[in-house]
Length: 111
Length: 487
Image (cartoon, rainbow over all chains, first blue to last red; front, side, top):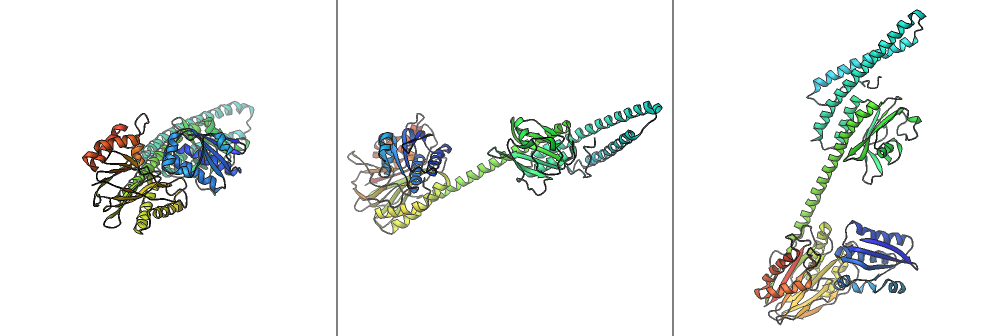
């Protein structure tokens, strides 16, 4: 899993690449989010367009990210959710929790 | 020349070679005395102001004394080398069975003192982050304990030695800009690197209160001792890793036993239904859970659940889930309320990144009715006698991740011949070499093929099919299956 963070109009866009299946490198997501929150950032978009695989640990990372951001009084929106991940969100009913947009642009503009 | 002057300590090493060591010690004492005597004569000679005639005589006398002195130095060096071989042989024999690193390194410093005398010594090893060298064993640093004498990498003489991977001899520390003071009495110092597999892992360092106490030759002796210290460090590390692995294996075995002891050991009896379940463990301990909860004579609670994650934490959450679900189920609340309460209970104590998916239902045997709520779990597949397929998806959010979640319950009426397959993602997400998941389609296919032979045949058929799909005898994740057939 690789993570790139950029800022668009004060919103932190986190672009995840590869597999969200846990492991030591998965720690970069919560660490980055925490660092941005410490800098005072509150609005986040998680771009999942390049995520080719996600298991329950990856789903846990997603939930953890949302919890961290919400606890800091912020918001997290998903963008570019691939079909496979969408079906995971459907099964677990997380679709009712995560706000999801087709593109990063739309997600950024929805704040 | 009096650099190896004995401190008067008798040799501490090896009882079997005690006699030889005490001989060596006596020889060394004699050598030291001789050496002291020669030094005195040399100094005495320098004070003599001879008349011209005797000058030549005196000069040749001085030369003889010098030769004698060189000879003595040579004997001393031969003696030191012989002693070193003896000590190193003893150290090497102990390396094989002394696993306590502190004991081993202290032995090395004791032995070293007999070959190269020092006032302070330390064997330093790089810490895990690779930023610091920390004293594993030290002596002569007053007011410091081992572990307290440390240096940042790249700083001081030790830092220099570790960076350049070469020994350093400093005759006067006060004139060396690299020197960082650890003890004020120190006048000279020698340090050599510790290597394993061609990499520097630490440093052996000696300090003396006398100036120019160490020579390049001393550094050579140090290298031999340092190489054995490095082997001791590496062996201790490997031993620690083995112990750590053993500990983890034992913990996992415990978690596995705990998990298995909480699973049902027989199939339940319920009128108009035939029910069977199985949990097939993978190598790692997963958090799968299934259960039958007897509510009344005609009502049976059924649950299939999966805790995200593996190992002890998953087994612990699984045990808590079971306890809480069994208590709530016994309270006869509505299923939606039961799941809400279990959700809040789990949310209270599990970490934010963990969650549980669960399917909970109550089978009314007499009425052939299932009332259920699906909390984010893989939808059980209902294969009707007619061949029609239904998925039991409704209910609510997965458990334990968010507080105050709401659940809704649904009812399904069964007819004889209907078959319900409940499973965990260990089955649906089992991958073949191409990374393709077993998936619901293959579950349905295998179920349809085996259903006419009964509910147990469906279980064995599904397990066979998933193994054929993955091409491996072992599983990547636990598989839990429950098959319910309406009679």
